[in-house]
Image (cartoon, rainbow, N blue to C red; front, side, top):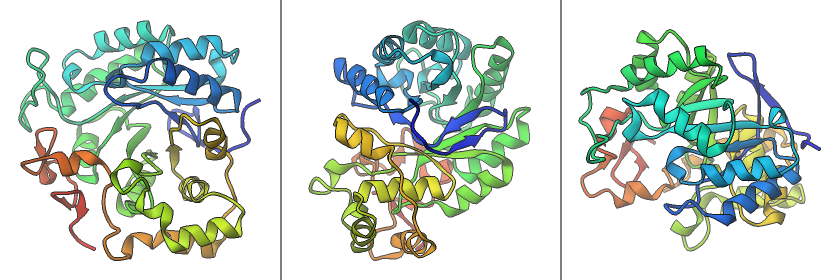
Length: 322
C-alpha cells in the first residue's frame, strides 16, 4: 500500500507525493544497491522515485520499478536532462526512457541551468548558446509527445526563474533545489508559490560525510529536543518540517529502517515550526551543505559564478547576508 502522506498538486493538475526516494549514490550510480533501495522503498509505501541521467543508474531504477509489483501508473517518476545534453533534449529523453524501460516520465527536469559541450564536456560560458532559455523551449516541445507529463527545473534561483519566465510558454511545474533547516530559502519558496511552482528539496537531511559524520542541523539542540518530544528521529523532524511548510522532500537511504522512518511523518506544532524556521539564524548555520562549494578552487559552480547563478553565497557555500 502507498504510504499515507500528503500530495502536492502541480500546475499541470497531476499529483506529486510529498516524499520521494532520491537515487544519487555517487559517480558509479550505486549498481545493485540502488535497485534494492528502490525496491525496499516501493515495498514500504513510497510512490515517488527521483533519479537522473547523470546519476548513472536509470537502468537499475527502472528494473526495480518493473520488479516491484507496483503498477507503473501508481509511481511518480522523475528523471533529469544532463548538462551536456542541453542541445540534445529530445534525444536525451529517449535515452533515459530506454534505460528506465518506461514509456513516459511524470516529471522531466533541467538538472542545472549550465550547459556543457557534448564534445569535450566542458562548461559553456554564461549567456552562450545553448542558453537555458533555448533548452527550456526544447523541453516545452516534449509535452506534445506524451512522453513527459510535466517539465521543471533544478538549481534555479529567483534571478534565473525570472529570466526564464519572461520567455517561457510553460511555467515549470517544480524547481528542485537544496533545502533544509540550514538553507530554508524563504525568498525562493515564496517566489515559487506565487508563480505556481512546487519547490522540491534535495539533500533535505544534508550531506552527513561533511561534518564528522553528522549533518549540522540534525544535532542542533532544538531539533533534538523536538525529536524527543515526538518520539521521533531528528531526520523525521527535518523531513516533516519540509513537507509541513509545503515543499516536497526527496531523502535517500540504503537502510530499510531509515527508509521507513523517512516516510513516516510527524505533526509538528506551530512552536516547533517556528523553532525550526530560525535555525539558520544561529552562528555558522546559514549555509549550503554540498561539497562542490568547498571543492571549487575559483569560487564558481560548474563554470558559473554565484552572481550568474543568482545565489547569495560566497566561496564555501556560506550565505553572504545573514
